[in-house]
Amino acid sequence: MEKFIAEDLQATVRYLELLDRDLLVTAAINQPMAVDFRIKIAVELETFDLERMGLITSQEAVVELASDLKGHVWPHLAKLSPRDVSGRIQEINRTMRREMKKMTFMYLPHKEASWFEQPLNGWKEVLERFPASAIDIEEMGKCYALSRYAACVFHSLQVIESGLIELGKFLKVDDPKSGWTAVANKLRKIVKSEHKTRTRSEKKHFAFIEQTEASVEALKNAWRNKISHSQGRLAVMTAGEFSPDVAVEIMMATRAFMRRLATEMPR
Image (cartoon, rainbow, N blue to C red; front, top):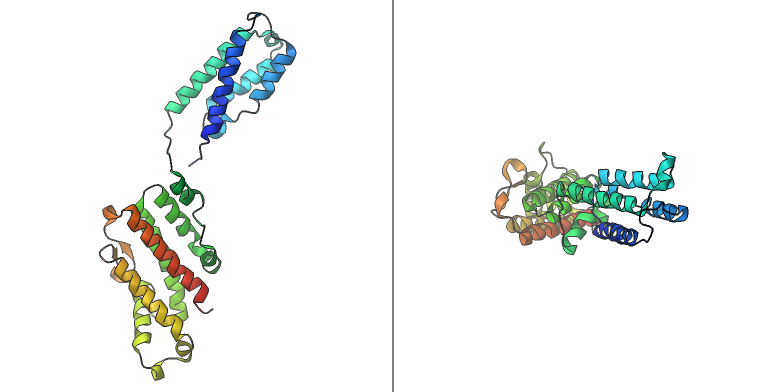
């Protein structure tokens, strides 16, 4: 997806309109244009970048006109009159309209645009500790910006799963399918166990384990009837029922949980 700069298109259209107007009121409208005037217009046209806006054919027409104004290819074109150039400019405008009719433009309000353009903002600690989560964090933000809320939640679950797998390594989870259920069960088992039965590491880091277990339970309650924990993994259950508010809540809960893991989980 390309970013469309509306002000650039507006400036281009405005310039062509003013140039066309000036050419049509020239006294010697049918006479060859002065060299310095032709070169001035050609240099200004060479600053155009319509291709960046997806207007490829229009850009080709602009490049051809600039070249003709300089008389590089066909010397006889150095005799172009204001009327000739006006006709070329009007054809460029028509080409631009034809090309734009074939495009679909998407508008993002400022708030949503920030999620799309800077989806990794606020995730510094998480990205440093869990760099593999970057792709899902980015997709989570972009899906939210584009109102694909179920997809946004899906990627947030992927982010949490990546953190849970690392947490499982720290807790020495021996389940071959380390993930939500295995890690949650391990946390619960440690918290409910007697002090004397805990390992040295579990005793040393019990405060972190206890707080993390509470966070996991809080996430489960927040996601009740929305997220499935079947087969030990997280999965979206009611894809059609995610509102923007629910998606934001899940994203914020995801970031808070992952930030705690990134900053507090012993290395």
